Image (cartoon, rainbow, N blue to C red; front, side, top):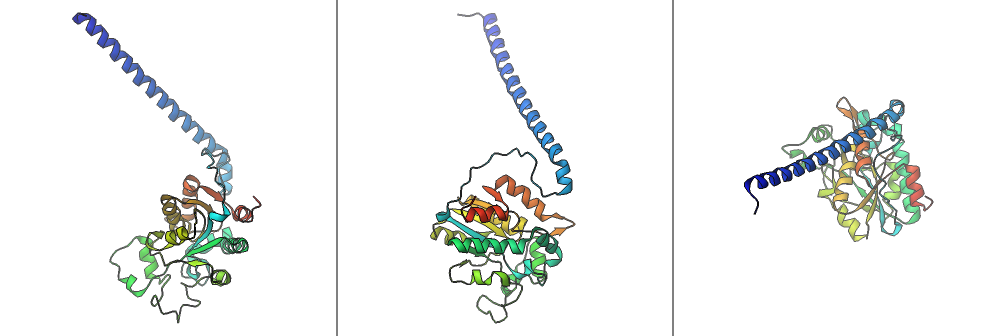
Length: 285
């Protein structure tokens, strides 16, 4: 039986070991943080000149791992959010804030290329449109962009059933895409009302079509595209975003495209250019 002194020595030794263990963990943690910071600084320095020339260019050397995403054509679908006049045409009500971004990325043509490629291979194609009916203007609250959209009459329709003034309106599909969309095979979902697909039937339609992977494009990058990306990921789909088949508003509050692009890099299963997406769809990647 140990005496009090021996017990004290044992307790002191045990405490010291615990303290050493804590110090070791703290040292490792500090070392890991320092190493991470060093990688971030080096990456920032390496891509600084590149970013100065093109803020949308990928980092010279990224820190995130590849996901190993592989397209399964039998289980994949092209999903395009809001391919509508109000977003993509100079006649649309948002052209003043998104037009520069749309033109810079060649968004209208790139979405068209995706439609053509997907249709040529028989891939499932779904449209997630955005409509507002008169009753929607009775909403009692909303975010800044919601307030703006309602104020400028964006995506307005007279009713869910009346299409007498729909053709060529801001809520209508871009003329360049109508042959693809109205071919009797494209899934045209019920409208989403804010940004994500939580309130429409997109997920149901994709599941019923046996879809597990989504190639995502459309408008706009940091709003509906990013919201669709996040919700589809949460529901178990793999999602590849086509970065130049989208665009976003450029306002004093910030560049919506840049904000979305950073998040796409962090959370999408794959991030492709239209050239890469078309090659993937055509089985030439």
